[in-house]
Length: 187
Image (cartoon, rainbow, N blue to C red; front, top):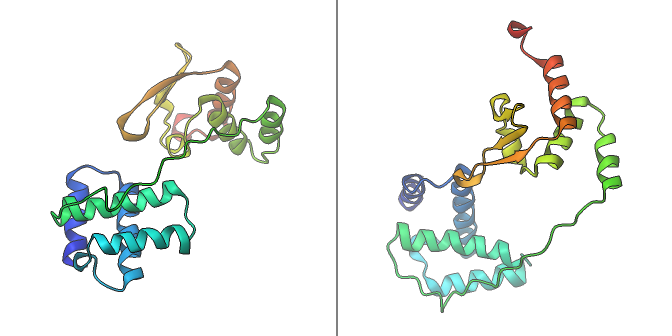
C-alpha cells in the first residue's frame, strides 16, 4: 500500500466516512492515477481538468458520477495532501435531479405477485410500503418493528433514522415469515 493511499484511508476513517464512501473514493483516485499513469501525489489541478474532460467525453459518464470522482479527488488533495483546491479551475458539473418513475398500483401488485419465494415477496412488500433503500432494508431487525404503534424504524444513511407507518397487510406478512423462519430455540 502506498503512503498517500494509507494516508487517505486514515483520513477517511478519522472523519467517519462510511465504508462504501471510503471504497468509492479509493477506487476513483485509483482510476485517476491509472488514467494518467502516475501516482496521484505527483499530479495537480491541470491533471484533474484533463481527467474530468476524459470522464465526460471518453467514458461518457453522467454529471453526478463525475461529481463523485471530483469529490474523491478533492478529498485527496485538500484533506490528505494539504494542497490548495480551486473550484474555478475544476468546477463541479450542475447537479441533475430527476423524479423517480412511479409505478401504478396494478404494476406494484404485479411485481409483488411475480415473486416466487414468500421471502422475496415480503422483501418487495417492505421496500414498497416503507420506502426504504436496499441497504436500509438489509439492516432492518425484528426489534425495529413496533406493532403496537404500527411503525417501522428505518436506520437511515448517515445516522438519519426515521419511523414510517406499518400497514396491517405488511405486518401480517412479516409475522407469517417470522413464524416460518424463526430460530429453533424460539419455537
